[in-house]
Image (cartoon, rainbow, N blue to C red; front, top):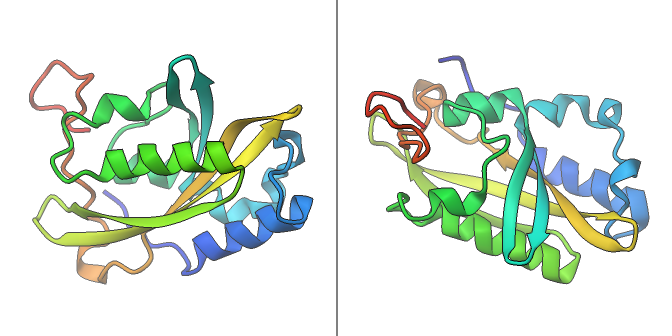
Length: 171
């Protein structure tokens, strides 16, 4: 595994970008210009909201997010991971995505997660709702891995992908 260090302030940088697009209101998805946030792209998640029933679908994940998770979440739902998550992080994420959807405002938080070596890490995140037409329909999110000690920055997370059938495959 490679290093997962990113420049500090990724959450804050994405927040400033999001605010500048529509004056603090949820901007249109079409306003997001990847070239403007190039340094953040590897750490980003884009999700799509489904409403009947409410679910959150990962539609795009950055390369560092994929490496951190040890697999791509693209095409998967947040709720797929809740039952197998004994630390509650995925429930925190699911609830935060719902709050961003319902309020149309950014949501910030943290969750605690162990690395493969057993270190407990606090991961900061920010979620920024996006409109498609008049509706909040997607969300741009980032997780900040910059505060991890250098010796464990590449350790990743030991989560078993509930969608994998072989026990040796990590998720």
